[in-house]
Length: 429
Ligand SMILES: *Cc1c(COP(=O)(O)O)cnc(C)c1O
Image (cartoon, rainbow, N blue to C red; front, side, top):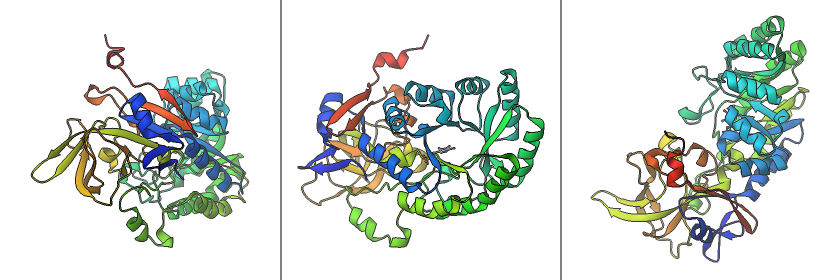
């Protein structure tokens, strides 16, 4: 489900016209559907109903305070990767006792902060980090609750920049050395509390097979660690992919026709149906760390066309959003459907590149794509921009960060102001 559709010829987010939001807040503008966020969270929660579990939303996908507040209100835990994200979760009313802290490079300040707040688990990525955590916790006369991240050496079959579960990736500890590491930690590290086991094999997985492979490979290890060390949870990570091809996009019908029942993209329900039976007899609490799945299709980036430039080889539509606002296409060839705010009257298409104003050739949102025509002054929505969109935005080219709006039913709330020029230089001396 996603909360964006044409109603009487104009694109809406839930019951709110995107045109009206643009008139009020300008462009580029991120718009999120609160209903979609909650729907995805609740459907995943329900799909895991057959096993004791907790959904810990991966904050890095979209860390706007209002998004976090909405998820906290509906009972989500949080997977964080920095002290800054912990700060945001606390500000949004999230419970630190339901936070897990991932990442290969935690600093002393971050560790101290998270220990003081009493987070649920440090998801540790190396023996060196484990020893350091033991030392810092010792100085504070505390025990640090820990899950070591196992690298199961499974191919997630996703873009190489977002694959994390192979031996050559920097993440986690090799599968084979985990039992010995837990044994030694139990013997030698008195300020470590072995609470769980964690894994995360990559992002934007569109097939359930790698998840099954990883769960089947690691389940015996989880069982062994429960027996030997009394661990109580196993986090199987995030990474559930979403469909970026959008039903509002030209060619959508053809796209769906090229997929058969077997290779249709992963659904939440299929994920639950395949994994719950493989998890439920372990007697462990199962944690999930979805980011993209919860927010990806719940957001769009609305941008206005500034110029049409007809070159010898190509036609460029130059829009007012750039790779600094949404970097996914430039960073890992991410696809975003591009949909006019005014429903196209005919099926006519033009082949264009949609590009931003940034001084980089990688600054494009699509190349050689057949789209309904649009003209300077008109707006389009870059669909499925709710995850790794604003969260990865920067001030590159000294461009102020865009505003963000959260829609719930018929009401729209500005949840982050557009940056001003003064904001750009705040903090510079
Ligand atoms: C990024 C990340 C996630 C979330 O990944 P999605 O693909 O957004 O679901 C979960 N766990 C860890 C450890 C991560 O680094």
